[in-house]
Length: 284
Image 1 (cartoon, rainbow, N blue to C red):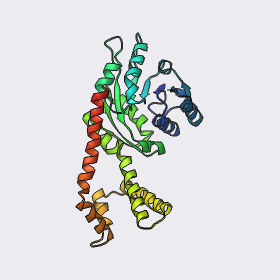
Image 2: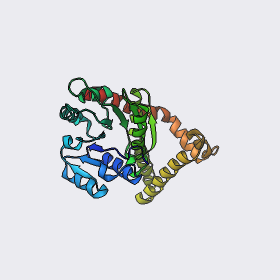
Image 3: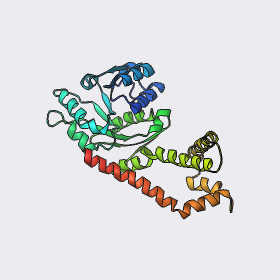
Image 4: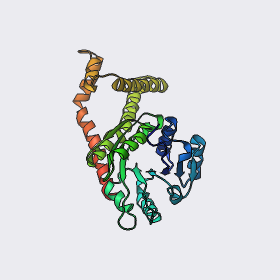
């Protein structure tokens, strides 16, 4: 039996990522649909979630969390403060506070703790998570950090929740590393999309029809990713394996090196990491 089988779980926000998490939980039978309630202001999103997952949806954040053991905060970062404070006010006098799992990008544990403070002194336990969009197809990766007071048992339960939509779950021990997770895997899918986009454009410029180029490039990306996951060799060794001396791949890689490909990638990951840190300060 799942460690969270008896949880009453509330979702604040019913967008794509929230829907992906719910789909994963139900597919793995981590908990029944009757134990999930979703608060979502948009009619279209509520109808999509009800149709796809058969869970209860409502408009009220307060009503959604009334009996919740845990809640997933899946709102846009810009509205997180108002939502947290609304809920904290509604929990006044409540004996047990729900466990918070926040996937709101850039919002720090400190900010969440302050915004969720109940009766001026009590704070719920918080786990901060950075997922990525491949969760929508069951291939997510995420990083997480446990806030103050989270027990090993609670961490294990959250891990069950995260594994429902992420193939890889990495717990970090310093919050600043969540910003690195953002730069690496949170924003990472876009790097691969851009790479495939430019590969296709190059093939088209060299005379290949767009549709053919896209099919070849997409499958190449998928196949390479599968090799990375399923084979035991490092990325560097896999690159070496496919590079024949003085061959076509070596010519391409030498072109990359001449353009400081490693530096370009590092600058991209660092730019995303720095922006994540900056957003945390601005939004907090």
